[in-house]
Amino acid sequence: MTQHRIASIHRVTGETDIAVTVNLDGTGVASIDTGVGFFDHMLTALAKHGMLDLDIVAKGDLHVDFHHTVEDTGIALGQAIARALGDKRGVRRFGHALVPLDEALAEVVVDLSGRPFIAWTVDFPAPVVGEMDTELFEEFFRAFAMAGMMTLHVTKKAGRNCHHIAESAFKAAARALRMAVEPDPRASGVVPSTKGVL
Image (cartoon, rainbow, N blue to C red; front, side, top):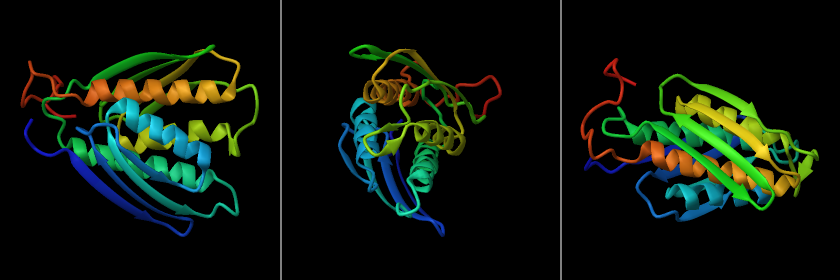
């Protein structure tokens, strides 16, 4: 796998203007500015623990609420990762991680299947963390999985603190994604599917 696995997406709607660049073979360097502080913190963790170089600038209608910005960032990031993966030759395809943060524990399993699906089994004890509605985490991951053409299972195993629950989920997603997109030295140049295409 010698090609540069880097892609950029610029997505503009009547509600948001989002630019994303991702390098799947990065070192975890992130430059994130969505206007939503806690979301920036989570995306920075995604980059760091996924070993993704990630540049995101999102301008959205935050005066309405954070929903459009969070969801559309998920769409743009998913699209960028799908573009960077190309035909997915030589990748491991599957990834999984179980990540703790103090009392919280999250499990994420990903399949770069080409069939978008999300199973979200995460509940939060409070409706807001920082200034961000906790229900928006599901919206982000759903948009990310659908646009990225991947199957994603996110499960809370334990946790009482909203910050810890969210961060353990993002870190688990990062580690699972890192595993899935990694080159498989035993399957170089091969699409990891009996169908021959993903």
